[in-house]
Image 1: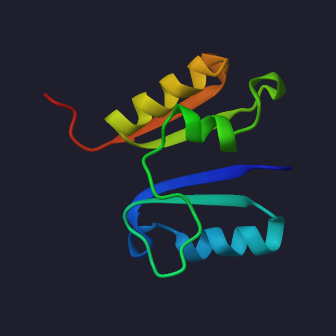
Image 2: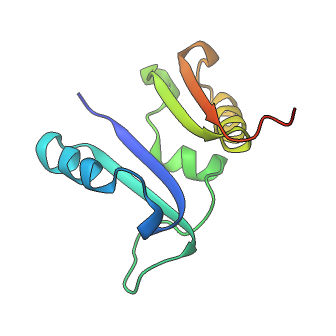
Length: 105
């Protein structure tokens, strides 16, 4: 099974489950892409921006493959990534989301 895990965070030290993700990469070939939005270590060759439609177009499976996509994060992040995927032609019924943080109520 092929999968891509995209992880957006401020710095590498804030990546949750980093060791577990590294093991999944080593053991199962999971393709992991980090984007660090505020602080990148010396020699960083990964992404250094927020997840946007262009980044999604570059890293996710094509919509024709009908991937089942999981998005987890703060509401604004989840909404932006979901919208980007739909704009790229992904089936909204194949996008699973989990939100955390303030609800605004």
